[in-house]
Image (cartoon, rainbow, N blue to C red; front, side, top):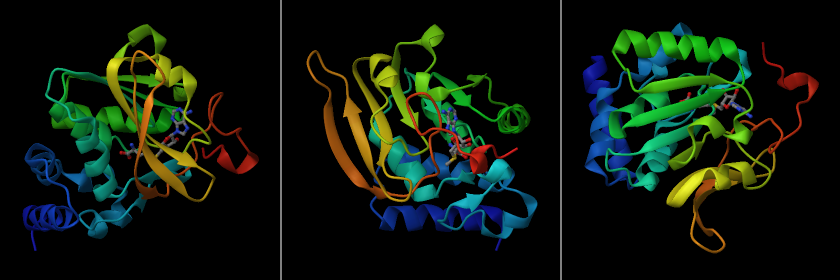
Length: 219
Ligand code: SAM
């Protein structure tokens, strides 16, 4: 089977799981996920599963990428913050569907590798920051949408503050093993919070996340 056929198959699998937004499905089918995974994982690049990447991290499962993206309800005009660049796959999906992506990663080597792949694929609407994404990116706030692609112990307050009124944040919140994927919408009063599904992400490490332990240094 060619990569194109495998990507079309993945699209059908996501449709069967309930992803409805045609623009999200089109982009998942078009963005070459095999470019974002290590060589030894390439045979599984179009399977609906998370895979290991460098620094002890993961590229998220395509279904979760699609669900998180769909849940932002993008119309193409937005500036979106992604916390956790990782492989750069989710940033590429966002870059196809919004005006500008600001992506923050704590591992410089992952950020650099993602930037290189994006350059080869021709993306020019992604901005890269290296540091603690639990603090957001105050220089570029407010954001119309925020995607947190690592698991937080609680909703990171600095990120809520960097959402514009009416903006949405998708964030996995729970313990170190199991979390709920939440959609948090900023309103004039308290944010509204909705649970989308249960999920399992690597830890969000930082001032408004989990403290770093010896095994988390990852380099
Ligand atoms: N979005 C990624 C992709 O498409 O490959 C998946 C990322 S992986 C599940 C989570 C990423 O979050 C890891 O690369 C990890 O280093 C990063 N991370 C964890 N805590 C972070 C923090 N405080 N700031 C920025 N990145 C963080």
